[in-house]
Amino acid sequence: MSTSCFDREDETFIVLVNHEDQYSIWPHWKAVPGGWAAIEGVRGDKTTVLAYVESHWTDMRPRSLRDWMQQAGEKAAGSAAG
Image 1 (tube, rainbow, N blue to C red):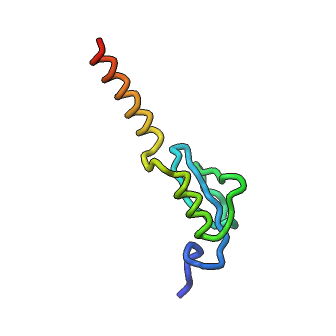
Image 2 (tube, rainbow, N blue to C red):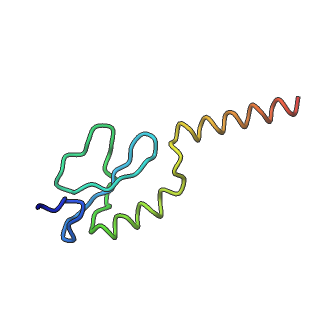
Image 3 (cartoon, rainbow, N blue to C red):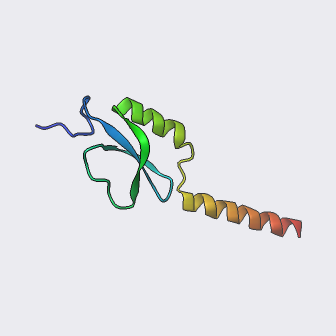
């Protein structure tokens, strides 16, 4: 049985982010999938890149949902004021 590259202790990872501000770790040697971009300067073992993701991905909601919720809140505030 082979071990997934995501489970190997000696693997080097990078951090990816998509248009919704969602993060993922990815083996450095694999092609970056469509819709994702590598974050410059972030590379290391699994513990290192997961620490980066944990410290930067502080709101798990997709960007589109955050934007929608903000617009809905602004509309509600405008309706209540007027």
